Amino acid sequence: TILERSVAFQQMRQEAKEIAVQTRRDARQAARCLRDLHETAKKLEAAVAAGQRAWDLAMAAESQKDVGRAMKLATSTMQGVNRMATTMLEGSEGVSRTRSEAVGHLARASEGEKTAPRFWASAATITRTSNEKLSSLADSIAVLVQDAEQPKCVA
Image (cartoon, rainbow, N blue to C red; front, side, top):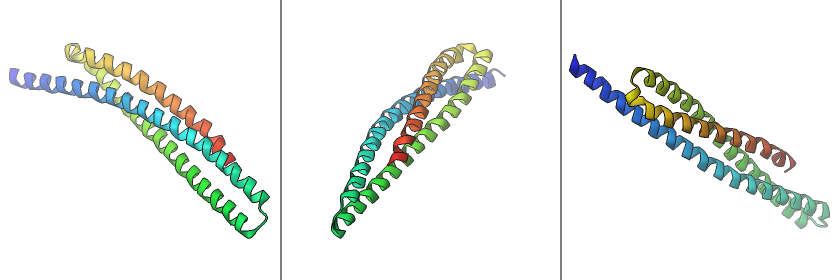
C-alpha cells in the first residue's frame, strides 16, 4: 500500500542520514586518534631516552643507593613504555574496527543508491569520502604503531 511504501521510504531516508552522520563522525574520531597517537609516540621516544639514562645510571652506580635509584627509574620507564604501547595498539585496533564498519556502511549506501538514489546519493557520496579518509588515517596509524615498535624494543 501507499502508506507502507511511505513508511519504508521514511525509514530509508533516516537510515541514509544516520549512515552519513556516522561515517563522518568515525573519520573525525580516527583523525583525533591519529593526533593522540602522535603524542603518545613522542612520549614513547622520551621514555626511551629515560631508559637510556637509567642504563647509564646503573652502569655508573657506585653504591647500593645509586643502583636502587637506577632500578627504580628503569622499572618506571618500562611500565610507562608498556602503557604507551598498549594505548597505541588499542587505538590502532579501534580504528581498524571502525574501518571495517565503514566498509559495511559503504556497501549499504551503494546498495541504497541503486534502489532509491534520491535518498541515498548524498549519503553514498559522503560515505565514500569519509571511508577514503578513514582508510588513509587507518594506514597512517598502522605505520605509526609499526614505527613505535622499535623504540619500545630499545627501551
